[in-house]
Image (cartoon, rainbow, N blue to C red; front, side, top):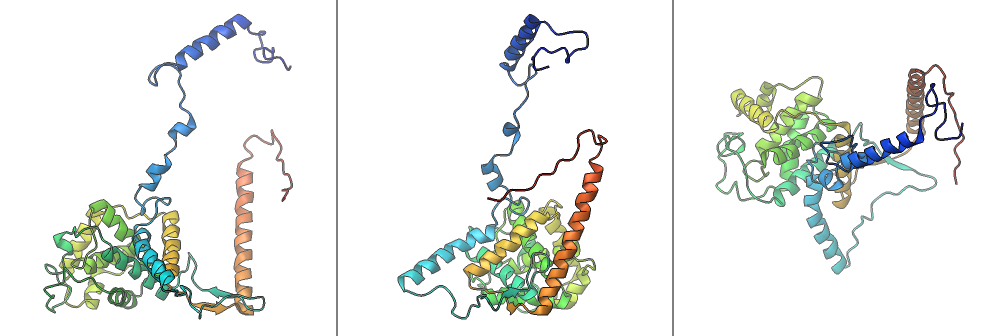
Length: 339
């Protein structure tokens, strides 16, 4: 049974050794040929996507690619840290809360339920860095505020040269989210669509177009994400001087520039959420912390047990579906050894 030319291979008897050597030589000769001839099988490592290709991919489509806004903010973060080091200024806040043995501080922002106010601050800060550290002023007429004003007020002559402050961007986005009653998840999807627009259409967010670009991203994100979508006419009630025809045309151009790719994978959404948390830490934007009370602890424990029971049921169901061989090979379980 241990012989390589065992009779168990063929019921008619053992194969002859010279023929086996012949076949082996033919196979070796064929594998030395090109990919188009012979029984050449490509190794699995040759079919994997190289790491450098994944890093150069669009961050709004691939979870492994780094977000654009975080890389644009690093220049200011390094300069700020260098200035603090030269001037001997402590980068941390003395008012920051830390957990202890008797008190545990947690924030109410999670990847599934982010804090609305803090998320909008982080998203608008990402937009601010996009404008401040932009490479050029590439834009389109449909997003130009001078050609398509959002209000009847006269647009200043230097509207394309003056960078908006973070407070101005935050006030604009917060007004839309508050009036349309949008969620924090919608703000994250807005940032995903915005960076997808910049990479697909090769545009830049600049002082002349940032309001209409952000408005188009919010308009699309609210329709895709929320169950009860906000109609274009509802935004016309918020921005009273804009027409429905203008909103429809901007939405149509936005979709065409996105190549109608409105899908946001869960991995991409999670990456943007945690990168926004990193952006908040780099800019001292603290999320609201609350002490862990008994009621909150019991609620977290109940949620944890519910998720644990759910995953147990799913694992049992998957194990039952895998019994296609009718217990031909028994299930083996071994205890884990932690060292």
